[in-house]
Length: 333
Image 1 (cartoon, rainbow, N blue to C red):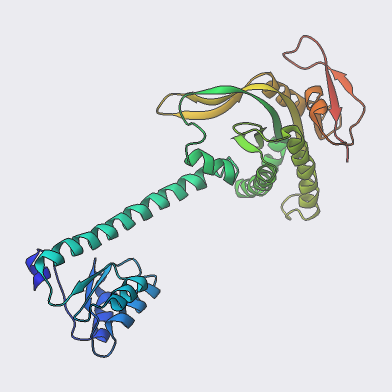
Image 2 (image 1 turned 120 degrees about the vertical axis):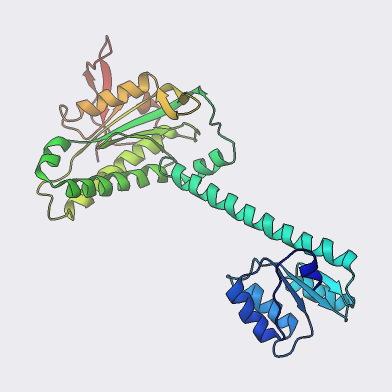
């Protein structure tokens, strides 16, 4: 009666068992229960509600004429939102019920925020490792227009003769091929502290050192390239029946200072990298077929490697956009 007088819709049950069924069927915003109930005691009802994921978030206010300190502590520690002493005073009932309902609303809002953050993290995780995605969500990495000049290593990965492959396959088969191959490559990039800046149809532009630098980004990048090589070999060993020929990839890697940041407008931002190292990595990837090597790195990347890698003899080659030829190093097994 008191609750109805406060403007809330209220339903009642005469015992704990009926109350439990009513709560399950009705899904109320709040439960007000006496600890002294037949069939199921109020304390056991409280325990059941808090143990059930479907009712756990419903605030429960308990009331009793036994308001000893031990009873109050037991009720609150079991999950009660508040405790009322019988006989009930309206001056206590009103604020305690309102407080319990506010707690429920805050929990609902918090759950919605967490769900939104999880969706944002999942979206960011398509392009960044989980750690970088978390730091973007936490605000440690800015999302405003502009950016910074960062020292980074850039990797272009591209599927060779993808146009010819696409002509030989059904659209669904080609989509599956790209999903399987690019998905596996992206996992390797993330595992080695890299980020996927762009998916270029049948290829990937990956960055190491931006937006977050690590101890040796060039090493992480070359390790990724070697793992991608092994991944492609394993894929070809068990390639799907619709694929008649092996998949071949070309990888170009270059290091240097790049601009890394958000470009576009406030309505449409895109995180991008710009600079000579980006252009050179793309040119090196194009040279892989001509030089009969699947992985090529530039001189800047070679001098940054802190451990021995099996590199081929350097090759001087002219690349588009450069007046002078550059030293190129094939990465061997």
